[in-house]
Length: 325
Image (cartoon, rainbow, N blue to C red):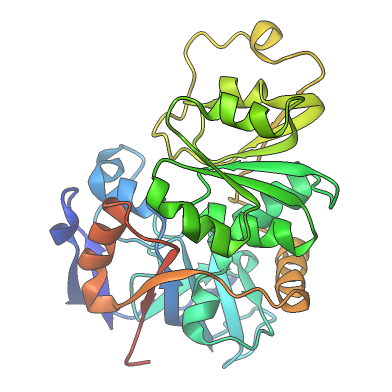
């Protein structure tokens, strides 16, 4: 089969497509014919530098998610030809992932879906929408009467979160560093757009002097302290992303830094459940949500796809398709 294999870290051009054997099927795992997959920032970090970490063993086929059809169900409950999505569980990190024509994934990280979407549309859903859905409805317990701020709103997860939040009638503020992305955010459903230029706090307080009820923090540790101080009493902030490229906080003093009556939580997508995946796809179908796709590449254009994501110019999810399958 054709696969894009990472043999060393570096610039996008280290991603080269070669011929490798189709994975051998084993008990408890599902062989998937990969139709398409979405690109994720964690894959960029793996290609740039994380591949050098002692817990990563190169060469490795990257890719933490995919959509496709069951090619061999082994001893699992799946059936050959079934439409499925697969995500996380070590895909593209502990074992070879989706940058290939076939991938072998543990059954507990494979989920049957009944979605009337093209492969390209479906590929924009799994990791991005699962992360946004879990953050909003599990961790933040979002309600229609909330006022939600999404920091990092122009990211693919941010755009998905805007769509999901608006689908239940929530008032949504979205932030971006670039003024030229204002219209994208408004078109996706944001009620107001705030610019990350050092004055976001005053911009927000001009609209909501008492603060907002919920914040989805996709920038991460770099802006978390400020975000907690933009909530009203009993507001919740959920840390989900690290767009600010800062994963930890120095000298974090919880008693002092977390305002009284404000709640801090997080969401990680490492352990998707059938219940949450089913709820996500049901919600998407019920509200006729169409994912925002920035651009579609073919498997042999993965280096170009990485370059686009690295430039931060993608307005939506970058999708890669296996044209031959």
